[in-house]
Length: 444
Image 1: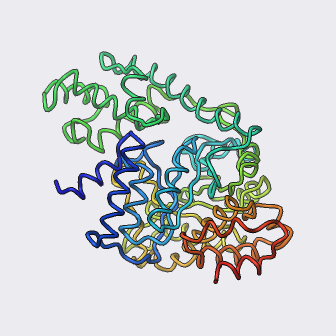
Image 2 (image 1 turned 90 degrees about the horizontal axis):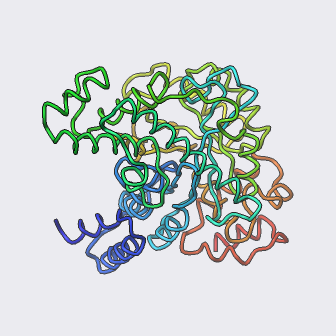
């Protein structure tokens, strides 16, 4: 292993100081000409989970920033479930690397108007994955801290209850939440995927790697030939553990109801109050709820949503103009018609997901301009909201720009033009500034 490879490996350490030191060493090598970094291109990824929720490759916020800069991405963003833990570290790494970055949060919400229709959480009517993007900072106002804290605490209690049910079924392979699950996280925010990895490792410890006993155990518990699942902890095994024990129809699954998650309206109020951009998420257009996309967006926008998140890679097969591709094109056109900001990414919270979408493909190339525009808008919002409180969802933007169409044009220009090393210059502005004043400084 080379020194550079060793330093890159250290970027995923659970120790913040070690991650910071490793990145500083890599930047010195860039400055010394030992590592060449490309000029930023046009590809973007604004939806990458980090190790602060679950990244299938173990990427910390710092690691993602470094790899994104090496890949020449134009704008990048982290998104973690129920926490803003990655935000400050990611911003610092992006500033050091001269990278345009932003951060968000993902959770699940209840949408009363769609209580009888499945939206984007399979088999769960009324439940929707939901996001806030472009948060200005990880420290939220006192009045909103209880809501943010409750997101994590509720999710962790849900995990613990789920684990107890699955433990009974997988016995004698049983987990201890603190020792076996939380130890896989840097800040105590475990997910179902962490538990699946923990079960795989616990079974390996119990029965041994490569043993017939291990294969027999999983074959019996999962009802399939485990030898084809990539034992001892391959992608197919992890996904099968999750689908067979934790998702709908599994032994540990409990159907959520209207009280299981906060309502979309309440979540959007929280996101707006802390300076983020409420973002509805779209799966693939096949559910009853998403087939009524116009009605669904009416509800989302009425409660404050200003953006729409899509995951392109799950919505097309290279070389095939199938129904999912048509659904993808349609939802992008619907979003553009409504002047919703388009947010896209690959997630990276499941093995096999790409680092960045292939925007050179015939299917995605036509969509790249819209996704790049959306990325520039979210980046500009996060900078202006953090530096001077004049972000996309601010009272200043409403007063000086008014319509979503005018906001999009202004924030796109700021995001496309502003250089990361000049972000601090935005701190000079007050709400007395005009859009022209800001653009003049950005363009200088």
